[in-house]
Length: 635
Image (cartoon, rainbow, N blue to C red):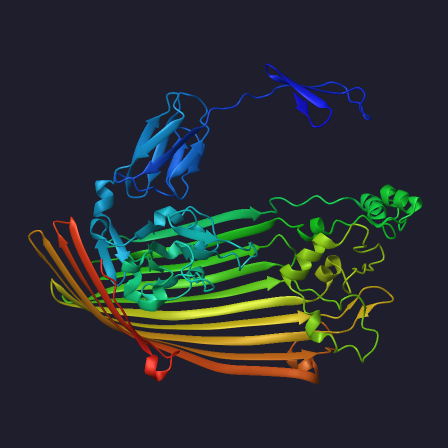
């Protein structure tokens, strides 16, 4: 058999023999490749429920091993078992686990049966709970057991791969910004954000601001019928997070901790300085690098003048340590229960001067006030701080005069990803990082290189403080009727300080421009909700009627300040910058949402189900003559 224009190969049992035409310009000797592994037999198949609906995300594992795969969106899988006698264990949330002997088969069709326990399971839905067997819409739920053994910093990472139809895309591994973007069954509107509405104990919030150890369950409402109770904001799905409560007559103390290490998974391998010089000569058709230069680069005896800088390796030089500690106390009796949690998270990045820390607190109280009243109170708070390096420079030349110092002030501001990483990839090894005298090299398009930027006193600090309270009072005059009132208040202070320091690169170039950007963003969220629910079982008939009202309001207050020409990098506050060219800005904004909603459910023998939802939404973001809209899905 012919390979290319001149090489032939022959298969001899477990060997490949390569041989080329002797008349070819560059003859090669016969090469024998030993230990050719014969093709392994793969087992492929499809996993469905009893009605033939594919079970996306079903798990297939070879029994007694860690060899396993996950079914794709259409329920298809492909697995290479270790032997023809292997047994495949197939599992899916809410379905009975099934064991399938391979017995030499290569194609399998597997149907899973819903388990009785799964049908009796209670899942969290909009403004209440339901038996899974009575849920009409598409709802997925995971419990604390499904996420407690995942050492993650953000809750969005914990549900990755846990629910069919729920996609989590993590676009960054930067500490403090590694939360994933969650989309439920794809993008709902072209050009719009795909993010789902997140409610924590019934109050709107961000799922990445909560400690994963405090979560009891996460429920995702994935289609219009299940999510419509929340109106227009539910277009991309709804994520309901329920936090933990204390237990009756059981006092417990739990401590959960882990230590992990982060490292770059794979870095591209770049050519050495002498290889770059040789290829540059060929590509440019010139002798920019002489043979003597190339020889000196290769000898690495004079790295000050003929360096071999590995910018990317130097940038990702750290093994980031990640530690988490959570201490919880819970207990109570029939009338009073409590759950108290404190947590600490410390995460170092794999880039110097990059880190994230979070300190969080939560106290959940449940009190029975007589025979008809129940009070649930939740206090929570967190303090976070994110730190990153910054990029300085002025696109190629140092500031040599006072006149041009302020000219490029806005353009000099770099970014951690946009400049630091991309330039570490683009700068060739012939560019000096830092010499033995402490002088820094000059990049082809800036006043410095990633080595100089990391050594500078520039910084970014992003602290965030959150606190809130959530109170729910339930009144149950009869066994069939429940009235609830919910009040929530969240406070968030988000600040950021970006300082770009002056820096000496060498005896000829000094980056004198120093400037500080600082902002403060305050958010206050308030909500009031009132609901009434009547439910009744009469033989095989099950009726439920829910009605409610909600009001939400959020206020923003933003301030930003800028100054330049600081006398020193040691003390960087706005007052110490020059008053010349100083800038400030600020604004306030506010929005409100008022809603009326109701839901009617009917079940006959838990087999024939009917559900109708009506919601009347009014938003301050729309003009007075068109503020309200009606949402009415039937199923």
